[in-house]
Each structure stands twice: as structure tokens, then as C-alpha cells.
Image 1 (cartoon, helix red, strand yellow):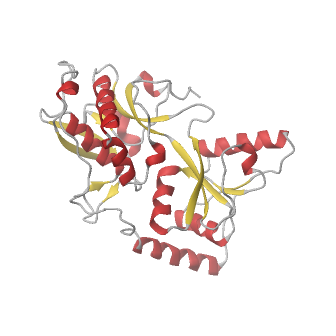
Image 2 (tube, helix red, strand yellow):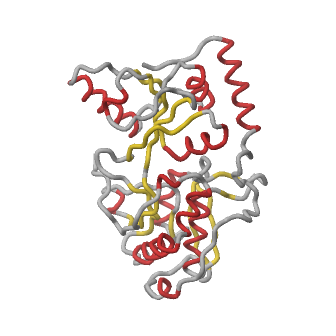
Image 3 (tube, helix red, strand yellow):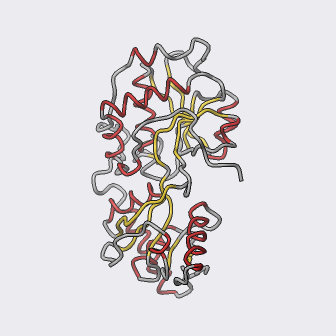
Length: 311
């Protein structure tokens, strides 16, 4: 079902919710200042540096240049000065640059432009929530650094405590994105439930985050199922929603998020080694926790693992 609110009172409430949300952007300890004094840093690793092939040419000799799409917190957003890029992905990029003994330069890009920018040598790597797929592996190499998770979130005082498998969504009204991977998962779960005689799920679609948030708070929807990271940020900011379950974005397979580099450039194994050093010394976990993303932690980074199959 595609629900579109039409009442004036509901629209007014949406406006109030939007304004309130903007007022809370700097709450609950998220540092959106340009100086980022609390950013986790790492020491240079001669062991990792020694693995970087001499044939790999960085865009700049003393710098790691990274393409990044500035989208939604906590992954990436602009700081209070409206020009400095902050968030988990910038923090992670800084850690990788530290391990390599290099300065960091972030190049803001539109997400759809990262393949061309990488192939043309505009930057050394992309760190911007890119998932590993078999089709992308034909042109790029990958070093995994985060689980690709979708999260089920409900109103903070909802009686729903767990949504982790198909039977848990039977009869619920769930907000999701039209034409997305998460919608595909819900439709497949609903199909399985129908075969077992369980109640159908009602899907709701909204074009605005404030509207979907209000639908949860007003009881028009029972849950939202969308990428975990931005919902985790909202939950930490206003405490109005809570996480009741996660599903890998590649369900029933596994989809990891990875640093993306040019195919055959030789740098991917070195980046994987850098990530595993960060995992081993705890810097990786600290950085994830700083942005409330601990559920998305990997136990180990891998180079070019199996990705989502071609459609």
C-alpha cells in the first residue's frame, strides 16, 4: 500500500517535526564541529606501508585522496561550518591515511559519480558506503570495512521487541523505500508468510524522512525497515525510536561495505591489511562507537570477497 497523508493537521505536524529535528542536530554528543577534536587517530604502520606496491601511484605523493559522497549522518555530512565533511566514513578514511603515514584529502562527489571518478584517477580510493557486488568486482577491487545492514526500528515504547525473521512481520504496517533492496526482502518474507497462512504485511512509502518519522510516532505505521546507519543516528538523537532487529542487506546472502579501488591497481591488499590492524588494536571499534554504529562491525576485513550476484 502506498500511503499519502492528506489532512492539513497531519501536514502541520510534519512541519513541526521537521523544525524540531533541525533543532536537535547537535544533541546527544554527536560532534558536528569542523575541528573534530574527538576523532580517533592511529599510528603509522611501517608493516602495512611496506606492502604498498611500488607500481601504485597515489594522486599526490604524501596524501591519500578519497572520494566521498556527503549524504546522511552518521556516515557523512557537513559540519557546522557547512564545508567540512564529518561522520564515520571521514573518520575511517583518516584512520587509513594515518596507517599509511599520509595526509588525508576528501573529495566530495555525487554518489553516482564515484565509478567514473575512480577510473579516471581523480582519487586513490572511494570510502562512501559502496557495497560489494559481482558486477562491480569486474571493474573495481574491494577491502571490506563494515557490514551492510538494514534495521527494523519501532516507536520507543512499542510492544514490539524483536523483528528478525519472516514470521515477525506478519500483519505489521512497515515503512520502507520503494524499489529498494529492503523492499525486495520484505516482499520475499511476505511471500513466505503467505505460503504458511500468516497475515500479509502492509508496506508504506514516504518521500520525506520527517513524514515517515511522524507516521511511526502517530501509530500510522508499526515499524520502519531501511538502512541501519541513518536510523541509528535518529534513535540516538531523539530517543523516539528503538532498534528491534537487523538484516544483512544482501539477505539471504551477505553484503559488505568496502573501500573501493581501481581493478588490479594492487593497493587493495594493503588497505585490507590496514583495516585488520585497526580491528586488532581497537581503533576500528572505537571509531564505530563514536558514531553509534557498533552493530555494523566486521570481525575481519577481506579483499574481494563474494559479492551480491548479478541481477
